[in-house]
Length: 114
Length: 114
Picture 1 (cartoon, rainbow over the protein chains, first blue to last red):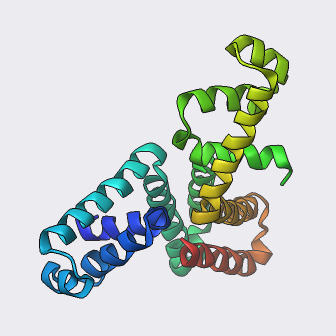
Picture 2: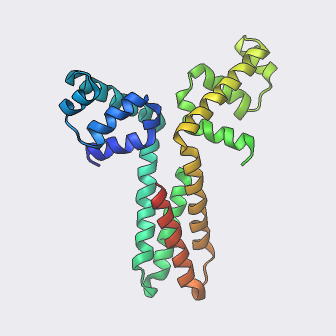
Picture 3: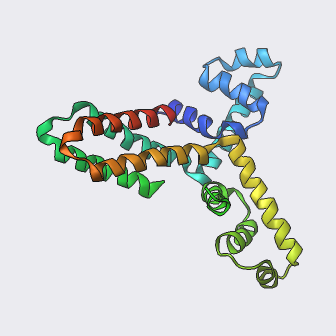
């Protein structure tokens, strides 16, 4: 996963634990890709202030993930469900038992993780 | 879900956000079912102190869930994966298309939620 996708996912999971001010600036810079200067002007704070705020917010989100590992868990589950869904799209009658066995294995391993 | 199962699940998700002291007492009282008096004696604090600490910890865990809804999300996913896994155990050849269609629907709806 690239850095931006990871930042978006961390924000999706833990963003509500930031303050509204942190969320606004994080969204503008990281998710909506405004420049630091644009956001600085818009918020009436310095460019360095915006930079520090984003860095601090990223650190907070990372710290939640270090403790809870929910994004990691979620990514693993999503990959397996993707594979299950893919299998339902492309199975052939002759491979049926194999397909069902694979879906069984995948769904079982998800239940072990959740 | 009964109250104890919910408390265990909230703790499983967000317990790492409590202090070690809160975790120890929460585990003893809620998960290991020791009495308040036993834990009070063990920890060298009052029975009321143990009660308040558990109540406060429960409130903290509930507040995280109110903000993040991750337990709610995971419970919904888990139920659907349970159903998928059940279907792989009990399908019959004649119902195959229906079974695959149901697994497709379930896996798709999980991907929409995750």
